[in-house]
Amino acid sequence: MQSEKTKCKRCLLREAFPEDYEKYVAGLLLKIPENAKTPNAQYHERLDVCSACDQLQNGTCMGCGCLVELRAAYRKEKCPFQKWA
Image (tube, rainbow, N blue to C red):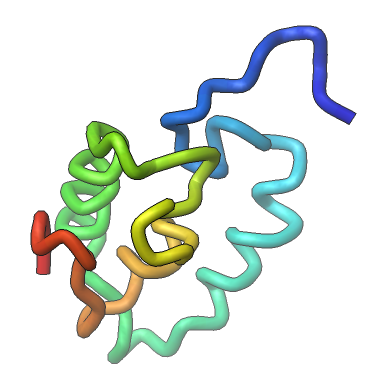
């Protein structure tokens, strides 16, 4: 059930659904092997780019369907629009 407050469409999951974030996405992020993870500073830079993109809707890239917080966390992943690598 969505709260009375309207959710921002151009938000990351941790912003749009904070009550579910820890349960789902944060748990998945913890399972990524360290050698496959994006360095922390680069991860946050990627998320900043995604947050400003018009293809972001409730944590999902509408261009490719990925959860941006997961895609950005993997070192070898790339933005489908070539905004970051």
